[in-house]
Amino acid sequence: MDINNRTVLVTGASRGLGRTLAFALAKAGAKEVFAGARKPEDIERLKRNATTMGTSLTPIKLDVTSDEDIEAAARLGPIDMLINNAGVAGYGNPVSMNLDAAIEEMSVNYFGALRMTRALAPAMIERGEGTIVNVATAFAKINLPIVGTYCASKAALLSLGQALRAYLADKGVHVMTVMPATIDTDMSKGADVPKMTTEFVAGEILRHIREESIDPPIGEEAQGVLEGLKNDPLGLEKMLSKIRA
Image (cartoon, rainbow, N blue to C red; front, top):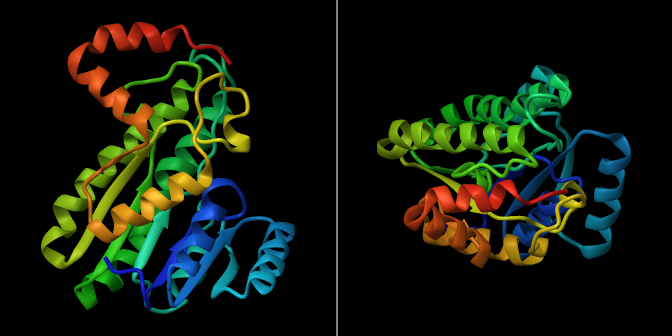
């Protein structure tokens, strides 16, 4: 999809990749970018940044677990592109980690994307055009145990994207799930692995949006993960099990 003159909504835009992506879309010529954030202080900071940078970015209150916020987002008008970026992650093994943290991961990372899609996709279908981008991880394909339940929630998101694509393809709505490896954000502070900058990942996502790619890996590490999964899945699984926070 051509980004120029499009109206885009980005969830989880208060910091990290979401923030970088929202501003990158505005700079790339989007007509308007709605940047979703939960906290009032994050919304105010985004407003100040947008004013300083002179971009077409509009911060909005958006918690993807809130029916009220999602309904308000759906009333913003025709949204050409939805980017389901909001995410949370916890460290620990699935047996002993806090269960509430694992439930929150599913609530935000999977159900949040599903709820946003259900709210915005009908208007895209009616117009016969739209793009939905889900931000997952290469570790949705094979689990990184130090963030095992997070990876499980992203695997669910990847699978959801496949189902949505099957349903929406003949309705003019393109669906893709991008799969970066580890990004240098607050969320990944505890991970002792190579990390990509948010600027690099945002640039790659914009490229894949324009090319209408299908579930692309982002970065060399992500490509290596998929190659390892293809050539030696058990070996890759053992290697990932040794990574510690």
